[in-house]
Length: 96
Image: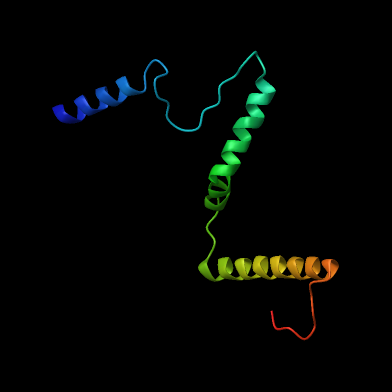
């Protein structure tokens, strides 16, 4: 029990007084909260945290998830084919 309390105190000391912070943080400079909010949103989006939270909001059966991923892959493929046709890189005779 004593070791656990000591570890918790050590952790608290590490993260006190702004030396280290837990999680994602953004510093607000010159009272520009809007810019800090945009930066924070970008960091959250880049880390994939928001996507993970949305995915965990409701359970999705593995079969349904597989169908959704296949549909997304097909959509990506069709978009890339469309881009290839527009740029002139698509040929009917080639197997892609």
